[in-house]
Image (tube, helix red, strand yellow):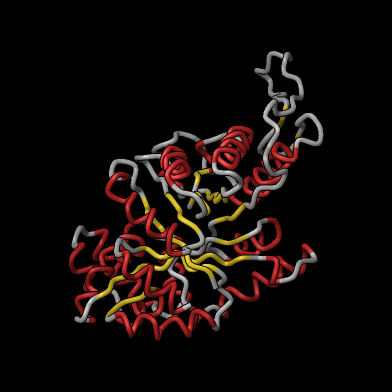
Length: 340
């Protein structure tokens, strides 16, 4: 199992995070991942990190597909891969309807169909085997809508990619999305993954892999794992509860919150309902307090350092191939690298 580092939405604080990333590069952490939502973008951050590191892979977790055309994403991936010497991992996701329609101003659409077409176009553009053409439900290249000029023609990238196939990882939560990810992507970027409850995903992962004729060994599960280290276990849990409450309670409307659905699928139905009710009523502190200790312990690494290193056994026994650690403590990276 490999380790990654998640620096989140760090565009405005990149100089503060840089020493941690450079430390990760030195001690042998495999990858560093930057995120975006509706603030700093991930591409600019990763460009900066590519110039300041030597070995560590740089990954987007995630680039929002509705924010960019597939061809633009292919251009970005080829450029970052060239600038980093072949170290780029393209993490993609749809985000959620609130951000897609509320921030980007485009329709959320049909997630499964859009994702499949998007990945196919990105791969074709990067492979550069022929001028880019695509005729799908969501994307037509060249564009052939009623308002088209008729002047568009198939083009081939003028940039020769360093690699003709750049790894693509997808963020997904729902069963159908997870199965699609296993079918078409090189890796999966789950959030709030529980090694004890991974059986709820296995059927869908195996279905997707079987449809593609692939082995699980050819597919990387790169789980984001929050970390809070300290002697007081409950205080460490309390550091992470607000983030879990934000996602379970506030990331989406009632009945349309993927993270709330995940907590329910894990068996925390009553807690998920309580957290969402409190959060949507504006009682965020109470929502955080309602996050069960068992849930925090399963999806995160919390407590004294020796407890955290002991907890690695459960993760190593799971199907996870990469743990993307959410930490700002260099000693955590050193200790877990040594432990593995």
